[in-house]
Image (tube, rainbow, N blue to C red; front, side, top):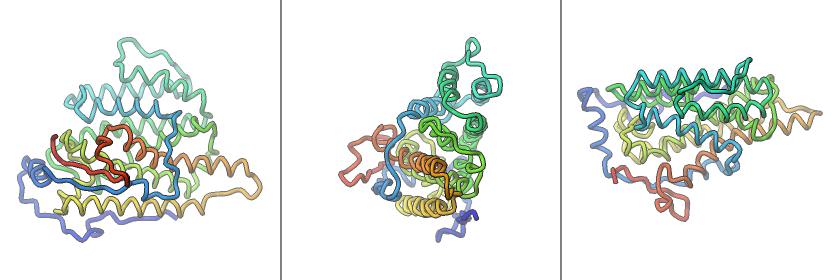
Length: 328
């Protein structure tokens, strides 16, 4: 049975503020209210205490390339303000995915292809060589969903009104690149999960909850960077905007969501289809679940060490990070 958390307005004590601001003033008002504030965020990894916090190096290169491709569209890259070129880039990327992971693989990129798409051809070629047929087709569909989701998120970020925080969270959970990264772990761990196990309700819930956890912790740890990039579609900021919450209350709300989704994920493991006599299958299941865990904890670990979101000097000896919502 799938667990459910109510994300409606009723699950917070704050009431939505009245829409008294003009559309064009909403973003300016939010920036004005939060500018110059700081918030001390506890060690995110401590909220997932039973899970390993190491990264999976065999998929690290792939994920870095995905970050690079994504940044061209949504964080001030060449395509951020160009809707037509963004859609063309997504079409080219989907074609690359089909070329490399489809039934009739082609690994030679077409001429004059943009570099951010061309770089995926050798990466996906290597991935296909290390994945079984079921995992390959699953990865193809997941990557296409991710690419289409990035185009959708770009459209949302260019609307005048900021989105509802729960609509944003759902969109991020549906469209974020975590699910294909989980499938890539089969390549890194040299396993293939049987389709009937992957489709089991408990495994589906573990994948979904690991995705939501990765989204939630990223919303907190990327807060400073996204504010400075004027990318206000961040769950913390959207909670402040919709419910007139303080910065600290909004961060605490997201941290509590991390705790709730972690507990749901842990509880689902007891319902997995463990075999009574096939220990090899059980080990494959355990490895796959550990891979799901690492996508969340590894993302947090990477965020603390890569300086993409904040400087190491902002992290104290307790792994608390002091985020500053300023333009310095």
